[in-house]
Length: 227
View (tube, rainbow, N blue to C red):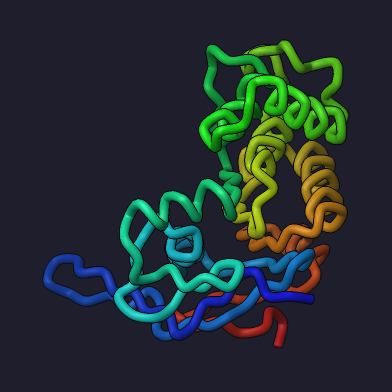
C-alpha cells in the first residue's frame, strides 16, 4: 500500500517557567493508505501535539511532515491550508458542529469551501450520512441529535473532501461505553472501506487494540504498544 503520511524525526520543545520540556524528541512514523494506527500514551505525553503537527496545525521545531508524497513542514500558511483542506480530515473529542446548521449542512460546508457546487455538495453529504445510518437525521440540528449521532456527523464532515489521512483525537472520549463502541465501529469500517489512512489517539486500550497497529508515545518517542 502507498504511504499517505510520513513523519521524520519530529522534535518539539515547550518552554515553561524557564524550563525546556522536550515533548517530542525525534518521532518518526508512517501510515499507509487504508491503515489505521492507534496512538496511546499518558495524558500530557504529547499525543495531541503530535497530531497537531501531523495535521499541519502546528510547526515542529525540526523534522519533516510528508502528506500524500508532498513535503509540508517548511511550507507557508497558504500551502498548508490547502493541504489541510484537500488531503486531511479531523475528528475531535467534541464534535464542533455548527449549532444553527442541520446535519446535511454541516457536512456540506467543507465541500462548499473546497469549491464544490451546491448540488454536488448535497449529493456527497447525503451519501456519507446515509452510509453512517443517519438517513433519518439529515435535517436535524445538533441539539436534536444524540451524542453518538453528533459524532457520526462529525466523522462524515471529516471525510467530505475524501482526505488521504484522517486525524482523530479521542473521538469517543465524550461518549458512554456502548455509544463509543458503536461510533468506533462506524469509524473503523468507514476508514477501511474508503481507503483512508488514519491516526487515532485514544486512552481506551480496548479501542486501540481494534486498530491495525498501535504505537505508544512515551518520553517523547514512539514505541510499539505492548512491546
